Length: 84
Image 1 (cartoon, rainbow, N blue to C red):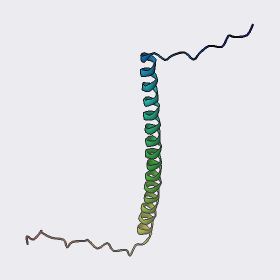
Image 2 (tube, helix red, strand yellow):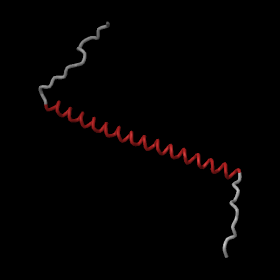
Image 3 (cartoon, rainbow, N blue to C red):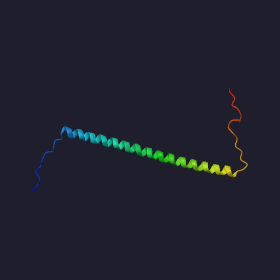
Image 4 (cartoon, one colour):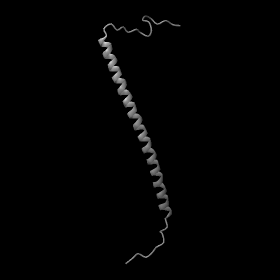
Protein backbone atom coordinates (compact mmCIF):
# COMPACT_ATOMS: atom_id res chain seq x y z
CA UNK A 1 0.00 0.00 0.00
CA UNK A 2 1.26 3.50 -0.81
CA UNK A 3 1.23 6.42 1.53
CA UNK A 4 -1.53 8.87 1.17
CA UNK A 5 -0.23 12.34 0.42
CA UNK A 6 -0.24 14.47 3.53
CA UNK A 7 0.24 18.16 3.98
CA UNK A 8 3.43 19.17 5.79
CA UNK A 9 3.13 19.06 9.55
CA UNK A 10 2.93 22.40 11.30
CA UNK A 11 5.81 23.25 13.63
CA UNK A 12 4.70 24.06 17.15
CA UNK A 13 6.02 27.20 18.88
CA UNK A 14 8.02 24.99 21.24
CA UNK A 15 9.66 23.15 18.34
CA UNK A 16 10.44 26.43 16.58
CA UNK A 17 12.06 27.76 19.76
CA UNK A 18 14.06 24.54 20.10
CA UNK A 19 15.18 24.67 16.47
CA UNK A 20 16.28 28.29 16.90
CA UNK A 21 18.22 27.38 20.03
CA UNK A 22 19.91 24.48 18.22
CA UNK A 23 20.86 26.72 15.27
CA UNK A 24 22.30 29.31 17.68
CA UNK A 25 24.30 26.66 19.53
CA UNK A 26 25.68 25.33 16.24
CA UNK A 27 26.83 28.84 15.26
CA UNK A 28 28.44 29.37 18.66
CA UNK A 29 30.16 25.97 18.46
CA UNK A 30 31.52 26.80 15.02
CA UNK A 31 32.86 30.14 16.27
CA UNK A 32 34.49 28.53 19.33
CA UNK A 33 36.00 25.77 17.19
CA UNK A 34 37.53 28.40 14.89
CA UNK A 35 38.83 30.33 17.90
CA UNK A 36 40.33 27.16 19.35
CA UNK A 37 42.04 26.36 16.05
CA UNK A 38 43.49 29.87 15.87
CA UNK A 39 44.79 29.66 19.45
CA UNK A 40 46.25 26.21 18.80
CA UNK A 41 48.12 27.57 15.77
CA UNK A 42 49.45 30.49 17.85
CA UNK A 43 50.57 28.04 20.53
CA UNK A 44 52.40 25.93 17.94
CA UNK A 45 54.11 29.04 16.57
CA UNK A 46 55.15 30.10 20.08
CA UNK A 47 56.46 26.61 20.78
CA UNK A 48 58.54 26.71 17.60
CA UNK A 49 59.94 30.15 18.44
CA UNK A 50 60.79 29.13 22.01
CA UNK A 51 62.50 25.96 20.80
CA UNK A 52 64.58 27.96 18.30
CA UNK A 53 65.57 30.50 20.96
CA UNK A 54 66.49 27.70 23.37
CA UNK A 55 68.67 26.09 20.69
CA UNK A 56 70.35 29.41 19.89
CA UNK A 57 70.93 30.07 23.59
CA UNK A 58 72.51 26.65 24.07
CA UNK A 59 74.77 27.19 21.05
CA UNK A 60 75.87 30.60 22.33
CA UNK A 61 76.60 29.16 25.78
CA UNK A 62 78.70 26.39 24.23
CA UNK A 63 80.56 28.91 22.08
CA UNK A 64 81.21 31.07 25.13
CA UNK A 65 82.48 28.08 27.12
CA UNK A 66 84.91 27.13 24.31
CA UNK A 67 86.24 30.64 23.89
CA UNK A 68 88.50 31.02 26.93
CA UNK A 69 89.54 34.53 25.97
CA UNK A 70 85.96 35.78 25.92
CA UNK A 71 85.38 38.82 28.06
CA UNK A 72 81.94 39.81 29.15
CA UNK A 73 81.50 43.54 29.47
CA UNK A 74 78.81 44.60 31.92
CA UNK A 75 76.15 46.96 30.65
CA UNK A 76 76.73 49.36 33.54
CA UNK A 77 79.96 49.92 35.44
CA UNK A 78 80.54 48.07 38.66
CA UNK A 79 80.53 49.84 41.96
CA UNK A 80 77.99 51.76 43.98
CA UNK A 81 75.08 53.25 42.14
CA UNK A 82 75.19 56.98 41.69
CA UNK A 83 72.11 59.13 41.89
CA UNK A 84 71.47 61.57 39.12
